[in-house]
Image (cartoon, rainbow, N blue to C red; front, side, top):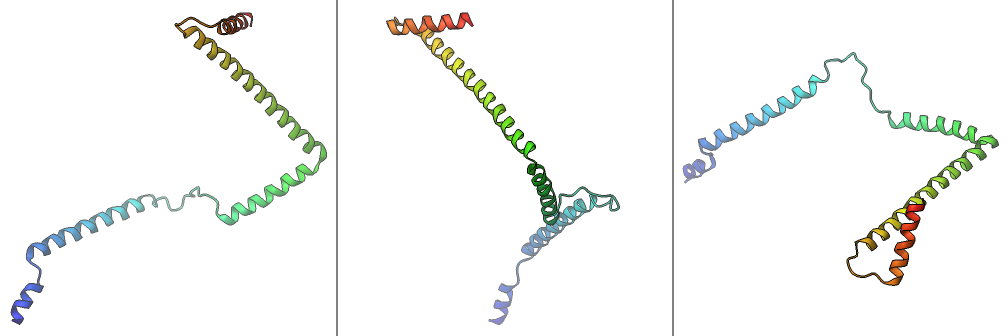
Length: 137
């Protein structure tokens, strides 16, 4: 009885062979990965550009923040810059709105021209007005 139990605990040779093949394949992949990682480390003496650490970034932020605070402390620089930026943004927004209005008019005119059926009197008036504005400008 003990002999039968011993025979069932021992895996067959085919399973051992498969296990060895899988294990060797895993080892091969691990070794290849290690070799690829070590290839980049050949130039050991050369300086690599690395991102700043957290402490270095905090130090830079503090020094830059003090410079910005001292620059904004002067009244002429502080008052001129925001108003100039605001006026520039306002002008850009106005140009954008004008362009959007023009596109809206053109899309309305396009839809009126594309209509195949008879237009109402209101549509005809709008169409004439838009065509007149288009050719006058």
